[in-house]
Length: 545
Image (cartoon, rainbow, N blue to C red; front, side):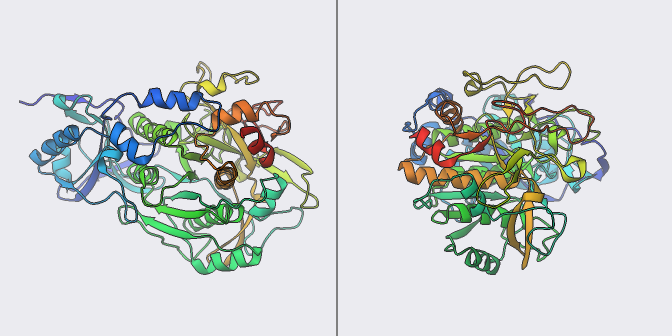
C-alpha cells in the first residue's frame, strides 16, 4: 500500500465567518496546478548576489538561461504525471497563458484536470462547498497529502481550494461623476509624476510593463479619450488571457473591479507613455494569481521588464505553501532583472482583518523580493510644488496605508544597513521580520488620481495607485540608464537613501485606522507607514547611475 505524508505548509482552515454548506460534487470537473522543486537548488545563491549588489549594472539571467539552469527537472514532472494518471487525472499540456511563450519547465508546474472525487483520492483530502465573505467557494480543511515517493518533489498544489485570495487595493473617491470635489485637489498621474520630479527626456521606450489583474476590465474608447485629454499619445496596450480569464469590463465604475484595471493602465501610461503595457487577466484565487505572476515572469513573447501588482490580502489569510511558491517566483524575477512593485494595502496596520485587534501586513507586498508601495496624502496648492505630504489615514471608513512587520518573512539584508532602524511589531510577543513598505506615493482618494472608467470620469486612490506609479518610474529609469535595473530595494536602501534629496521624508501621521490595533508612527528616516518616503525621481535615477 502506498504511503502518504502531509505536504508541508498546505494546511487550510475556513476564514472567520465562513460556513461549510455541503460536500463538493465528486463528479464535478476542476483543474489544479502542481508546483515541483527546481532542477538545481543554487538559484538562491545567485539571487543573493543580485540582492546584495549595490550596483545598477548587475548580472542577470535571461529567461532562456533561467529555464535551462533553474527550471524543473523533466524527470520530476514525469513522476508527478505518472502519479496523476494512475489516479484518473488528465495532464493538461496547453500553454500557461494565451499570448505568451514559455515552457512548463520554467514554470515548474504540471497542470491537471479531472473529477473532484479523483483529486480527493489522489491528494487525501475531502473537498467541501463553503460560503464566505467574498462569495461561495470550494475548499478543504487540514492538510493535503502526497505519496512519500513525492517528498521533496512536490512543493505545492494550487486549485483544490478556489476561494478569493486577493482583492484590489484601490479606493474610490467618495463622490462619483467628476474630477475632484470642494476642498481637495486631485491629480492626473502625469501631474503627480511632475510633483515627484520624475526623469524627463525619457518615456519608457523599449520597456514592457506587465500589469496583473484578477478581475474587471477596460474599454479602449475610455483610454483613447483619457490620453487625448492629457495630450499624451496612447501607449501600446495588449492583453494576455490566463485559464480563460479575459478583459471583461462591467460597464459600471461602482460595480466590479474596472476602477482597478483602469487606474493601473492609466497611471502607467501617463507616466511612461513610451512603454508597452501588457495586461495579464486571471482569477482572484491563489492558483489564478500565481499563474498570472508566473506567466508575466516567464513570458518570452512580451518579455516584461517591470511588473505592477495592485492586489493582495493579509498574510494571516494566506497558506504558508502558497506564500513560499509566490516568493520563489519573485526570486526568479529578481534573478532575471525584472522589477516588481506591489501595493502595501489600504486597511492600515490591521489590513482590514476583523475583529481589528491584531496588526497584519499585506501579501504579496511582504515578500522580501518585491518593492512594497505605501501611501500618503499629497497636498499641492498650485499643482506645481508640494505644499504638504503626510501618511494616508482616513480612519476605518476611508482606509489608510498598510505597513508593519511580517509574521512570515525574516528581515532581508537590505533592511539591516546603516540608517535603517526597524520598529518592533505592535503585536505582543512577535519577533522581528520583513518590514513594509519600502517606499510610498500619493494614495489618499481625497487627493487621488483622475481616471476614466466605464465612460465616467472618476477619482481613485489607494496604494493600488502607487504600485503602477513606481512601475512607471522604473520603466523611465530603465530607459535612462540603458539597462534593466531589476530588483530595486537594495539600490533604494543603499545609493538612493545615502543621496540627499532622493526621497521626501514623511514624518507626520500614523497608520492605525481602527484605534484598536496600535499602528506605526511616521518619523525621521525609514518608517512602517511610508518606508523611505516618496520619490524625487530624477535624483534617484542619478544616484543609481
